[in-house]
Length: 333
Ligand code: PMV
Image 1 (cartoon, helix red, strand yellow):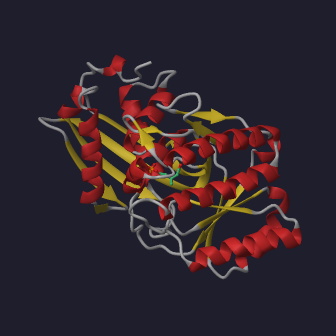
Image 2 (cartoon, rainbow, N blue to C red):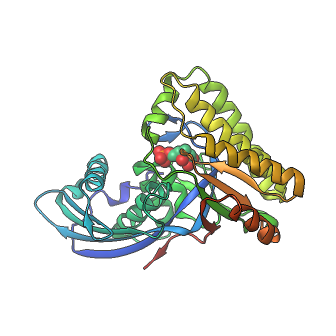
Image 3 (tube, rainbow, N blue to C red):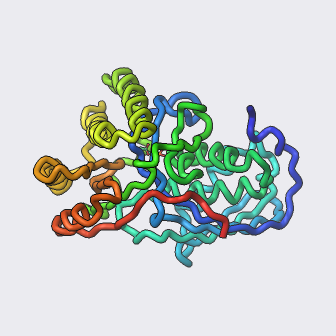
């Protein structure tokens, strides 16, 4: 189904809307693309609750496409240029974009420099505004996910609350996954090891998978891990979920470390926390597992039944932490 085709001949008009959209953490990682912004393997993620972006967009008819963007009240040309390029990339399907001026006001609830990627929350919030400008019909969320994917792959999974898959039902948009009640509420404590900017962007990282000697093996492994993870989530098997989660985090970073132009995004502090988490789990039998995004910070995942003991351990690490959990997905605000 071409989700944009019905909107090719839309008339431009004044319109204002705002959406709040969350970040997500991948349990099975998307790393490597095919075709036009399609994933080389399926992925599965948990949508967060506290780490969100709130975005207001004012659409005004104009002579040509323009984008003004304020992040937390300050003009941000870099992000405005990114959105401008993104909108230009949609012009062949949506020619009316050429006749709109966009005024965007956006802010993140998570602290700047927390090492949490704002692209999934930020670009999904913008895509929701654009999808609503088109129509709020029964395909609205699917269209918003499709539009998010074209801006940043992982953003397409932020459109739904709970758990989300991408590259299983469809490569073009994400779908919600209803998991076993035992695993439907999980905590994610984001342990901040470093808040420095990433040295290699995700875009460049995906690109490096094209020449990667282990790419094919990784896509096969990711496919298997996806099936394992999905079955574990449906069956409520915390141990298989946790072991697969850690395997995915290490595999993602192994890809970075063995790519033709190799790079390493974590350091000794990340390794210390990974080792301590494993030791704590062995000693206490408490199911606390780690994952990493494309960066050095750890996401520690655990169920509510062990919250007190897990939080005490996490606080003892001596690092700053954002205590988050599974969230219900975007809201119009
Ligand atoms: O959405 P992108 O292009 O920034 O890629 C993100 C990839 C990872 O965050 C590393 C993994 C994932 O699936 O979210």
